[in-house]
Image (cartoon, rainbow, N blue to C red; front, side, top):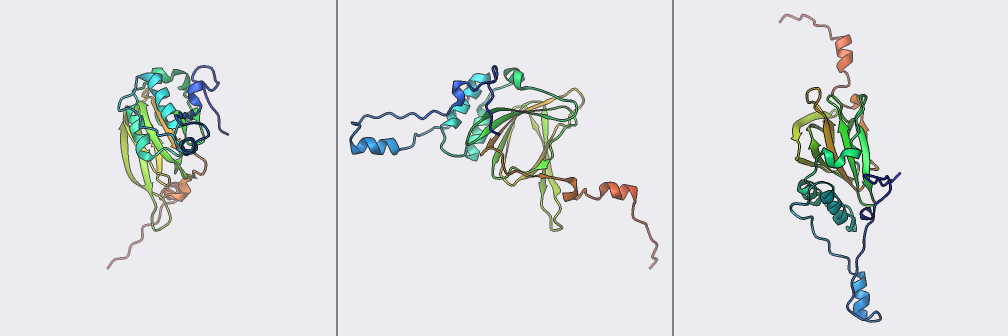
Length: 232
């Protein structure tokens, strides 16, 4: 269910609400007025560098709220790169748990949603895709490890690459990219990341280990294959 979250009060502040701004300089009953009213508002990309902290995040969300459709991939990348935000700016959205990583939705609209994810060392997401959504991740604190998976001819997923994503860096994934995000850093090194999904996540899929090349791993340890001798 779509929810809106105020960083401080739990209610949607005014900057969360999409604004439609129209200005008319022709008489209300003129054809020019009617045509101007149908013309969509032109929205520019976020500034190269936004203000620090929440002020900059608020400004970015205002820009995205004015878009009539999903946020383009390059807008997600450029917008997240323009942020200068740290854990202190998200203090009431940062929550950890010893069992699993935590997700806090801080903004939700028809075209996109924004979440803060928090990870203890050793915690990771399931292997997943994003359905029909584009995903952008900004590492706010710590280092994330992104593991990408690819399909194989035997119909099992296999890891294809991995990369460490440091604080301040941004990674963007397309709808059907399959990946896993983890915190593989030493004990005491927490990970805080800001995630944007456009459109909001709905049809994404998580994959079981039985659908990967690791499906038989533990069984092979418990019951390894027999080595036979067949001299030539």
